[in-house]
Structures are given as C-alpha cells and as structure tokens.
Length: 118
Image (tube, rainbow, N blue to C red):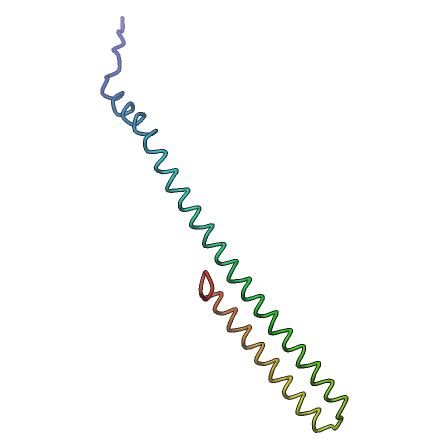
C-alpha cells in the first residue's frame, strides 16, 4: 500500500507572500502607468499645437504671396510693357523659390524634432 505524503508547506509560503504583496504593488504600478499616459498625451497635444501654428504660418505666407501676385498682375494690366512683365515674373519666381525653401526647412525641422521647433 502506497501512502501519499502531504506536500511540504515551504512551497506555499512564497506563493502566499506573493499573493499578499501583489495588491499593494498594483496601485503603484497603475499610478506610474497613468502618469506615463498623461505625459504622452501632453506631448502629443504640444506637438499638435506646434503643427497647427506651422500650418497657420504657411497659410499666412500663401495669402501674402497670393496678394502680391494679384497686385503684380494689376500693375501689369495697368502699365503694360514686356520688360516690366519679365521683371515681375522673375520676382514671382523668386518668391515661389523662397516659399519652397521655407517649407522645406520647416518640414526638415519637424522631422528632426519629435515636438517640432519651440
């Protein structure tokens, strides 16, 4: 006849200690996780805010460029003359190049910095 001996009580002690410690550790871990999530949300909001500022700046620049082009076209119509038209066309091209360069620099800054320029 085989007699089964009970399991040693030593194995139950660490399990009981772990079970008692787990509820105490859970709130601290949860609080840390909440803080991290709040920080991430704040960073995302700051990033969105910076992007919105850039879009508004670009929109302002585009409106200024559009107004300049309208003024130049009005001047061309009022004054005429091929040489003047060529000069104004060159000015427009320079302005467009400058706008393109500004946009390129801005996009590079945004890609290089996770939160964009401050």
